[in-house]
Image (cartoon, rainbow over all chains, first blue to last red; front, side, top):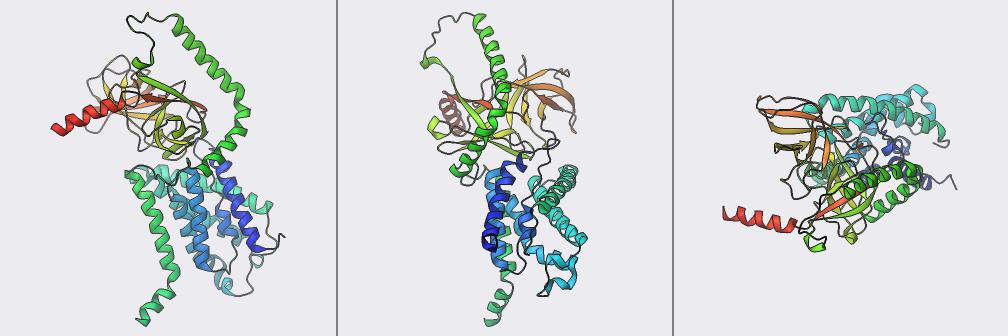
Length: 169
Length: 272
């Protein structure tokens, strides 16, 4: 049953949303750090799928989290941008290899995968926090939030992704 | 024509991305100047019930603490009751009560973002409406922004859109209470004129200028103050009485005279 990729993705979607809204949105480390772990959905999503559908499902993921966190459409903006720029990031990190048919994450080195995850997270946080406040007067606050939240999100994502390592991709 | 269609087909993902990003941007930017979205927020039944279920579980772990807080409040209220001034010529009758109080529980709290909202477990069914004040046993909390049948969203004072009339206790110097999004236990009071004598530690309470809150609800104490750039008004940092990270039981205040006050103000404005 767990070999069906559609089922896995639906399950992943649901579990990440639940984990994000019920656990990670309420952590509030030091009063402001709430790791945004749902980025793992985009990190894990199969490589060679219909891109338009990937954009739509990412938008939907962000939107569901927005509804639960009362953040208008900030998460949706971040996820849809990530989904759109994922091929660009991957080409940047894995080189031209990634466009070959045989490419999987397994052929990539650990360092490459970590860099890829880190880039996704940083991009997500930059979009999320800049549009959240949207004022140059708060630039230091925004930078502080991006720096610390990215760091904590990265740690949690690495932990989660090694806990639920994907075997068949 | 053929080439235009080919062009669109070739870049269809870019167009889709631009469209979705535009939708999100419009949603987000509109809310900077206007009320929160009416249709998509955590008071709707699905999100409301998820938060309700999760808070039902979590509440068990805080029962003792919450009981203590309520017992302390009961103690204070009893003290006031036994020492109260005789109410001359005024009977306790629902026709001459100005404010009604409704009790609710917070099912979702947030304080880390620049625009924080809380979800509470009372809604239209319990006659909660937009723009009612919300307080806790310790002080002011926010204003009801949106309601559904069973839940309501409260715009916290920790919200850059929030502006509340506040004054220095026992005086009539009033200003506006705002938040600069920096620390969740400090809010700012602006528009207090320079000639007002201030001391660190002075208590700040709600003012009489609003039809949302009754006068003299505690907010916090002055933590530090300095003059603004024009040197004519103070910028005051206020340490809140409420621990905004730990809020469970709240009271919603319904002003029975509000419609009358608003009506009067409106008719006066119309004449001008």
